[in-house]
Structures are given as C-alpha cells and as structure tokens.
Image (cartoon, rainbow, N blue to C red; front, side, top):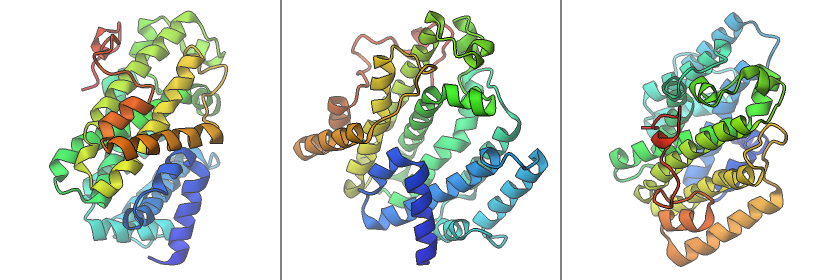
Amino acid sequence: MKESQLDRGKAIHKETGQTFYYATRLLPSRIRTPTYVLYGFFRIADEVVDGNQGLSPAEKRDQLEHIRDAALGTADAEDPVVDAFAEIRAEYDIPDEDIDEFIDAMMTDIDTERYETYEDLEGYMRGSAAAVGQMMCALMEPDDREAASPHAEKLGEAFQLTNFIRDVREDIRELDRVYLPMETLDAYDVTVDQLRNEECTPAFRQAIQAEVRRAEQLYRQGVAGIEHLPKDCQFAVVLAATLYAEHHRLIRKQDFDVLSTRPSLSTARKLWVVSKTWWNWRRFEDPVTVFRRVSPIPEADAGVPDVEETPGVFHAE
C-alpha cells in the first residue's frame, strides 16, 4: 500500500468519522492501517450518492458500478483509496458478496427515501452496516470467524441505527430522507410533515424511544461477541461501542428530542468516555463487563421492555 493511499484514507476517516476515529487509532497497526482505507472507501461511495447533488441518478449509478468493479479488481480505480481497498480485499479475502451488498445499499439511497417496515430497513442495513461489520471482522482475522461474524453484523447495525436516530433532522432537511421505519411513526401517529416542520411532539419522543430500545438490543447482541476477536483488538472495538452508545445518554438527557438539537459528543465528552473505558478495561478486560459499566445501555433484564413489547415496533432478530 502506498503512503499516498493511506494518507488519503486516514484524512477521510479523521474528517468524516470523528467518533469512530478515536477507536481506530487504538487498534494495533496491522488492523489500523487497512481500517483507514476501508472507512475511506465507504465514504467515497457514500459521497457519490449524497455529496454530489449535481449528478443525475443514472450518473450516480454509473459511478457506483465503476467503484464496485474497481473494488473487485475488474476495472482500474480512479481514486487511490479505492485502489488500496482492492488490494486489501484480495489480501484479506473479503468476500465479493460483502462488497456487492455494500454497493447495492448505496444504490438504494439514490431513489429510496422511506422504509415502510423495520424489515425493509434491516434489508438496507444488511449492506450498509452488517457487511461493513463483516469486512472489519475479516481484517481482524479472529480464530473463530463463524462465532464472531453474527455479532459483528449486529454491532454494525447498532452503530447505524444510532446514526439514524441522531440524524433525523439532518436527513429530512438535507435529503428528504427518513430512515425511521414508517410503521414506527404510524404506530405513534407521527407524520413526515411533522418531521419536516421539526415538531417534537410527545408522540415523536415515544417513537424515538422505541427505536432507541431497538438499537440498544443490537448493542447488547453485538458487544457479546467482542470476546471472539483477537485480544489486542477488543479494547478498540468496545471503545467504539461505548462512544457510539454515549449518544443515547444525550438523547435521553434531551428527553428523546432529536429535532430541536442534534445529539453531538463534545471532544471533552469523548475523552471522558475513552478514559473511563480504558480504566475499566485495565480492571476487568472483559468487553461485556466494561460496556455495562461505561455505557448508558441498560441490561436486558433491568426493567426495560424488550423491543417486541413496544407497540408498532418489531423484534430486531
């Protein structure tokens, strides 16, 4: 891998993925370097869809197809990060289907603005989040990939669902896109027009609370599998989980109002989470224990209703 490829991937990661960047820096170097490239690749594909509004849908599809071909090694890459990703794909034997699912999810964003059911959204996240978790798992090369993979998928979906909850206002303002399942909004009599008008009603707060619970179930499932990863990767992954989950503390503090203010972690707050996670890791060295002690995610048996008990919200599995 050329230095220019790594530098560009790292720069993209630092600029656009600041929360995850904190955790990435603490991965061992053999994993950290390709992770910068992976993240850069993901962002380049995402920017084709959402970052260049001057392109027509057909032009966006053409660009994504070219990125797919370059990533799979069947076409020349126009970007050094995509070229580096193709090298990593071959070196770590990342399955073609993971790349296909990811690019297909980016294609979906071109013309899909609503998801009627959570099952529909889960289909999208299979490419945009679960496949990403699988690729990261491939980089870490756990001894038992079969045991680690399902949890990596759930953790990827947890991160993305937190992003969807956090970014409700920005997604509808800038893209007229709603990632919250329509069945959840309908169950609480929340309309898309209310989202556009940024009306934070009691019903909207309940809808967000339902999706927060769903995401937290995914966190519990994902964190349970960190133990299957190489020991020198576990702290960085549990740190990524505690940093993302910290948004839920802010969301609760705002009484589930993500329309008036976008929940955003300050640098000081991130450093506090890093310090607390590290202190607990030094003491326990167990991902589940550390996550429970640091994150705001309640245990499943702590009196919080399961997802399927919430009206209009279906089980995440």
